[in-house]
Image 1 (cartoon, protein in one colour):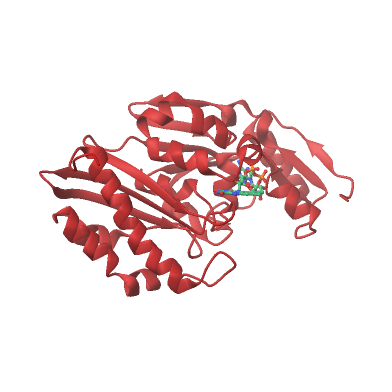
Image 2 (cartoon, rainbow, N blue to C red):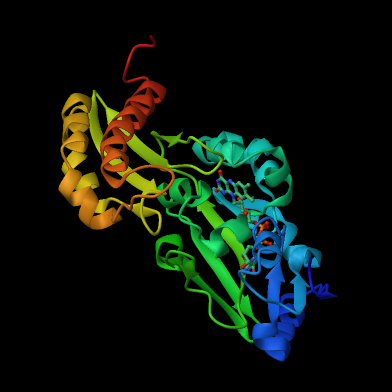
Length: 291
Ligand SMILES: Cc1cc2nc3c(=O)[nH]c(=O)nc-3n(C[C@H](O)[C@H](O)[C@H](O)COP(=O)(O)OP(=O)(O)OC[C@H]3O[C@@H](n4cnc5c(N)ncnc54)[C@H](O)[C@@H]3O)c2cc1C
């Protein structure tokens, strides 16, 4: 049973931010409610006021400018999975969105709610990292923009400050010739592991490689040192490098034992699935013959 809640439905960012300032800790931003209502029902958080941000027009918009897709925070997972521009320009992201939970959660949950909650067992953030995505954050006084990897601070923690809303996510297209892949491992609805790879491969050599891993530790992360090691190598060598990086991955990703799997298992599967994703990218690039 919920305690009675006051619902506020602002139509501007300024009004939403002012409501946050007015009600302080008693208020929570509410988008799809997929996470929030569960937390309230299980009394893991407390609120007296819900500020529904879905009536803010700007947060519902999606457009593109000079190759960068701009997605409002309240666009749902299902809208993203089905959107033609996303499927064409960021197909691995569209695929990741199509894998979130189930159709009920995808219709209800929003990209902004997913990123702002920053549950470690999430899909979209990992693949957005290889796109070098950034976010726009705002309050009644103004806006700021920061790279997604700086927005993710820790498990359930982001760079959002009191009174701020996540407004938009900017997703640049991948550079010409680069293709991407997202693979996830799951036993239940929430993923145990998600890996994203983007690479440009010329004459069988990895010219530029971007790698990201999510779910196994506190937050999704780019593997920049490994990217450098893989650049300039043939596919077979890159796969070998990826399979041999357990201690680097352990230090960076801080995997934990939990109900979704043991830390050692997750680390092993990270190496394997990064290699598989790289192979899929090579295949998409035309660098491998089709099976
Ligand atoms: C059964 C189940 C299975 C799931 N499986 C997956 C999965 O496989 N992969 C995956 O990635 N995710 C999964 N999820 C998580 C789901 O994707 C997220 O719950 C959803 O995207 C959250 O979005 P929402 O709009 O419902 O957020 P809400 O529940 O409304 O809000 C979540 C949090 O974000 C804050 N918030 C919301 N919008 C904003 C904003 N614009 N600015 C600042 N803060 C904001 C809220 O205050 C709250 O703290 C699952 C969830 C459930 C319940």
